Length: 102
Image (cartoon, rainbow, N blue to C red; front, side, top):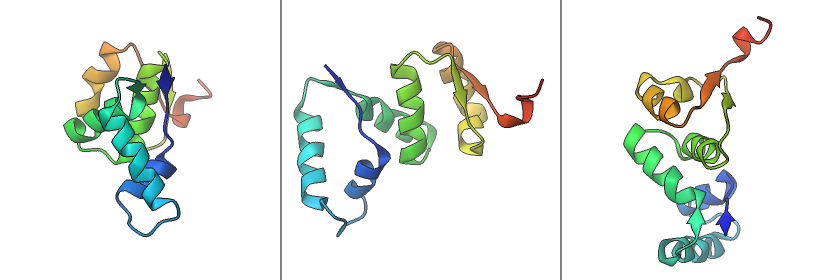
């Protein structure tokens, strides 16, 4: 089974006092202890290895996990030189709106 977690939950792991803070940490513990294939595991690795924000890493991990061929973004963090090899290795083309009319 594959499960995906939205950044609105992940952010609760870092910002204390949010609604459902305790529940978000229960989910985090389940992820850590789980054998399930959580996108967040890949996202965390990408976040740390490429010095990205958690939300950016989640989008990239989701693109990888779903075998996306194109990732549309206007976020300069997603267009970092250091990410090029990662995208190439997963056959993901990063596109911006600048070239949409071509």
